[in-house]
Length: 390
Image (cartoon, rainbow, N blue to C red):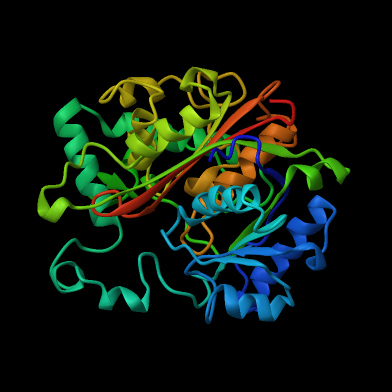
C-alpha cells in the first residue's frame, strides 16, 4: 500500500519559547497540540488518532490522550529518538489510508534546559542490551559517536572542518530572520573552526542547541483536507530504516538514509533533482553532510564540495536547507529535531517561511530525521511533501 496522496498535513505549530520553566512537559504537549489544531481549523474533538514518542510522559499516548481528553481509534507510540515524528507522519498516513483514523495528531515536547533529561539521556537506556558495553565503558557522551563518524569521513574523503562549518554558516544566515531562534546571529567559517573543540573534530559551533519547547502537526484524510479553509501539504512519499552496529562491524561512512531515502523517492515518484527545499536533521554538522550524500544529493564523499560557497543558503542556493535555522541555531526541543524539520518543510510548501528565506514556488520539500546516534544505532526517516495539486 502506498501513502502517496493518502494524507495531508493540515496543521503545524512550533512552540515560540526556548526556555519554559513554568510548564510541565504534558502542558507543553497540550499547548503545541492546540496550536497545530487551530492552524488546521480543527479542534481536539476532531482527533481520532494520536502519535507520540519517548518524550511524552507517563504511558505516552495513553497518558496524553487522557490529559487532552482525546477520543481515539488509533494510538502509536513509536520511539526512534529524534526521527520519531517523521516515522509518525508516515504511520499516520498509512493508518488513514487503512481507514483506522481520519485526523491524526503528532506532538513533541521537552525541557532539557530547565529540568528535563539531558542530551542522550533516558532512564530506560540502562536496561538496553548494549548498555553494559557502551553506557559506562564506551563512547563518551552523546557527541562521541558523531565525532567518530566525522573523523572517519575526514579520513576516507578528505573532508575538512571548514567544509563542515559551511553548514553552520548557512543555518545561521537563516536563523537571523527567525525571531524565535535561540542563536539568531550569523557566524563565519572562521568563527566556527575557532570555537572550542568539544570532541575532535567537532567544535562547539558544530553542535546543535539545547532548548525547551515542542511542536505538533496534524495529518488528515483527503476528504478532511478538502473541507478545510487551509493550504495543506500533500504526503507524497515516506521511507524508514534502522541502522545498527552489526555486532561491531559498523561502517561509519553512511547512515540509514541510504535505505529510507530511496524508498521515499520511489513512492513519491520524484528524484533528488526535483527537491526544491530540504529539512535535514542537524544534530551536528556531520549529520547534515552525510545525510545529503546518502539521500543522493551528491556522491558519497563529495559532501564537502557540495555544501561550499553558499549551496545551502536560501533562497537561491543549490539546495536551500533548514530555513528556520535548524537544530544548529533555532530549536532542538527535547533534544529531538525531527518535528521542527517537518514544520519548516510545511511552511515552505505553503509559502509561509520568512520572505527572506522562502524558496520561490516551492513544490517539493523533503524532511529527514536521524534518531539515536549517527556513530552507532539510529533510525532514519525520510518524508517528501508536495503542494496540494502535486
